[in-house]
Length: 189
Length: 189
DNA sequence: GTGATTTTGTGACATTTGTCAAATGAATGC
DNA sequence: GCATTCATTTGACAAATGTCACAAAATCAC
Image 1: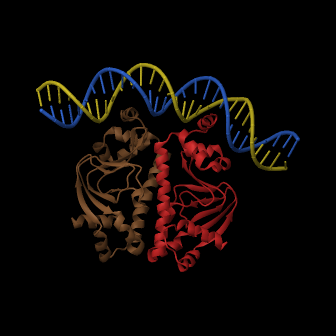
Image 2: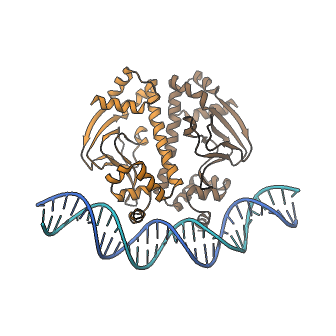
Image 3: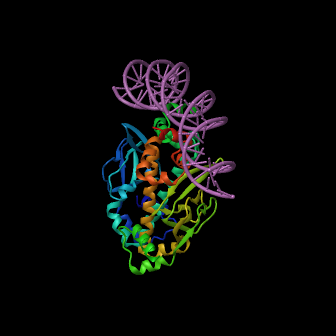
């Protein structure tokens, strides 16, 4: 159990020095939890204290646009689940829901945040996580503006083949920004 | 001149404590420069040492997709110009070009970066800047996935009316992800 | 296994948007 | 001021995508 937490910290502390003492300090704010399929982890328009790291399972994030869901991302093993708005203690724009039974590490941002401002190592660690997140967002924008929906589908196929096994095509179509039917026709080729 | 630099630091250090000493430290890595219209500030596929803060002027960023330019953002007064890739010392994906004669504060990321890892205040400051940038990216994704091109045009009209005075419609159309002609027809209504 | 429910695929048609070409309007140089 | 260049608008048509309806396939409950 502690092994999993250590693995998480190491994954996100690339290039940042974190002493044993700081790891012990961080661990006080992390814990492991299990949730059922379809569990709503984060709810639109609400404030939350936690971010999550996926040990096992899958999740999706979606907004509601005129009553229909628009999927914004999917998370699998070793991905972070969270929102900048949680980090900033603001209500969320999106809902995050588990697509499978999941084991997660939960991170209490509310109690961790004061440490960021007082502990250099944790400040650097936090900076590295946000940097990683910004890279994720930048890539996403790049793909969206740069590629056709067909190209984006093929990229998803290549980068995250398991996504297509584990996620209904309806969600993937909305993630790609096209209708279910158009995705179906793209796949037929 | 130092006033401008101080103004920049204050704008980006909201919620972060920065002592006089640290400001002095930071200032060693900032300077003010003037550039002519059409000057290429950052060049695709190259590494750069600097990020910029716009005192006066306008700039655009674009990728090349199959020979045609796809505009990704525009910067005006009090905006930051930079790339995560510069921060990470990687070659850029995009080209940044000045649309008007401009006065900029340049920030030497190469020499500032070591300070981030050793000075808590600068680490927090840097974290705040990246956090701001992540928010900018998240908003952009939200708008792109959530709104039609027409809605995005109206949002731009509302949020940055000056953009439409200062930027050719061809660039704006490509930024919105539609053809010049379609934008022209949207505007006709 | 069987029926019910959900998910995915296909056809027909309407709508939107892109593309190409030409016309109009605005800005610039001499 | 006039010609040249660049930016924007408009029209005609083609291509892509969405929508609606329904069929086929897969999944789930019992």
